[in-house]
Amino acid sequence: MIQKLLITIFLMFPLMGMIGNSDGLGKRIDREIRDEFHVSSFEHQGVEIPDNLRQKLPSRISKENFFKLKSDGNLIGYAYLDKAPSKTAEFDYLVIFNKDLVIARTKVLVYREEYGGEIGSKRWLRQFDGKSKSSEIHDIAAISGATISVRSMKSAVKDLLVSVEILKENKVL
Image (tube, rainbow, N blue to C red; front, top):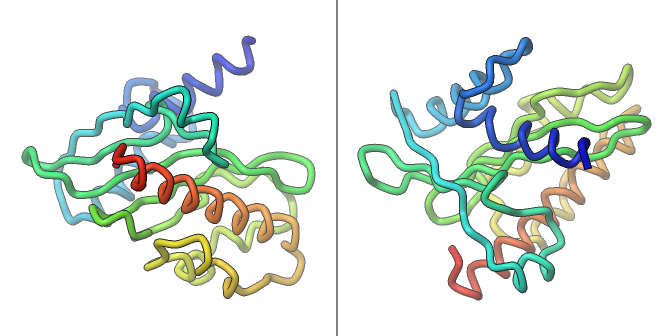
């Protein structure tokens, strides 16, 4: 129960910049969003997912980790924050979508393993840019020495895209 609460707090507040954390995660997330959309400021709003629909989604999506992003009152995109398993730990990642729900940027925020950190490279992560359907994930290249993390990130993004497709079909997005 405590772990679930801490994960919820972790997922909710970095984007809001309300918790001063030692690793500056909230600031990094905000910077990624500002850089992607070329805005100096933005607001975010958690996307409300009906309970019956949330249970059908392959990704853990809730208003605590999936956000509409607005600047000057206009929708500019969406952001999704979650964790994925690596060999012995988990890594935190961010997926930024444009307003048409096409992946604009992915970012590994915190990687906690000794090996496999190459999945955090901009060059590798750029392969996800422009993807909007789960069927487009099959062509993501492998990385020697990061097999588990690569599979985990590919699976997480594929599940997220399936979830987004379901949310679009059900007119939540």
